[in-house]
Image (cartoon, one colour):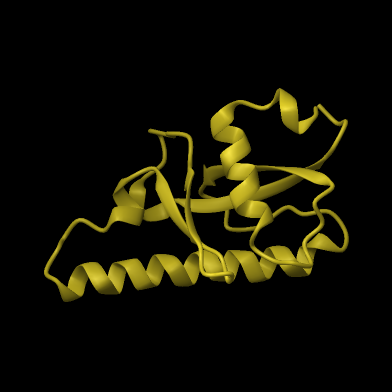
Length: 121
């Protein structure tokens, strides 16, 4: 599957995830989805970058929780909405949309990233 074949929302998610690191390979497609399993499945040399990016997403989630509690807001956006703020070190900020998975509880949602090689369906 090539990038041009993806839906607009999938392209936005892929673009946002590819900006996480300058060293990240741009030869693969990215899918982001909710999962109760915290392990990240990445092939070969991408494992280390995947761990760093997972840590980044967890840190962002903790920051949003702390900010929401500081202003007295009981609704933490990252836990209740299907959007994740993606901060990129170049100073830009983008949102990645996650598909709704109603069978998963909001407190056990994890972001799981799978890199799929171009050409693999």
